[in-house]
Each structure stands twice: as C-alpha cells, then as structure tokens.
Length: 167
Image (cartoon, rainbow, N blue to C red; front, side, top):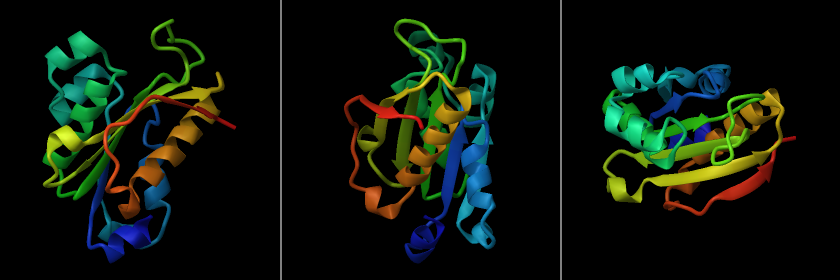
C-alpha cells in the first residue's frame, strides 16, 4: 500500500475511532513510511471528532458517532487538517458491549476521500463484521481500511452495506 501510494506520488492520512491507532501503527511499522504517511488522527470521543476533524455537532447529534455521515465528515476533516491526498476514516462498535439493535457490535463504518474529489463521491460503507470478539473486529477493520488506501480503489463510490467474517 505504501509503495503503491509512493509510486502515485500521494500522501495518506487516517482518522480512526474504534481502531484506536491500529491503522496508523500498521503504516508506521514499515521503515520509510514517512514519505507517504502524512497524519493519523485518533478521535475516540465525539469531542475529539469535533475538535480535531471538524465533525459538526449536528452530524453527531443527528446520526451518531457510528454513522455514514460521521465517517464521511471524519475523512473530510482528515484531508482538511493535513497534507494527505487520500484519507480513510473508521468508526464503529468493537464490543464486547456498547451495541444496540440498530448498531450491533461488529458494525464498522468506513469513508474514503481523495483531495479534489467531489465530496458527494466519497466512498462510504457500513460493514457488519460477524464476530463479537473485540480484537478480531479491530483487526479486520484495520485490514479493510488499509485496503481502502490502495490507489486501485480510487474508483470506489458510496456502497451498499456488507457483512464480512472477522476471523
């Protein structure tokens, strides 16, 4: 992923909630990542999403922290507050508690934004990871987010909900 973005001349940024920095850690574990990795925002609370990523209180109050609108705003905020060319946002419910009927444990919402892209075309997706194991959900969400940063995913547009195993 880093090599592909390096070849494309792009910097990447991430805005993380339920993964708590795992995507940023995976990127910075690789020597030489500093020429591609621009910024990682760990915004676990609603207040952090507002103050670091400019997510509006109206979005949080209307849709909640785990929503397409919040993920979209997080990705947009990561671009606005860094020199990244591409940003991925992750927010979700890793469990084992905190879920509800409408937002069960394992629900993770992703957004992907490219600098210069029409914001209406940002990729957003709700993924229900079929597990109640916190570590498995966070690991699967990290891998999904890393894949979203690949340049060959640039054609992605808003998507339907999907369910995936979280091994």
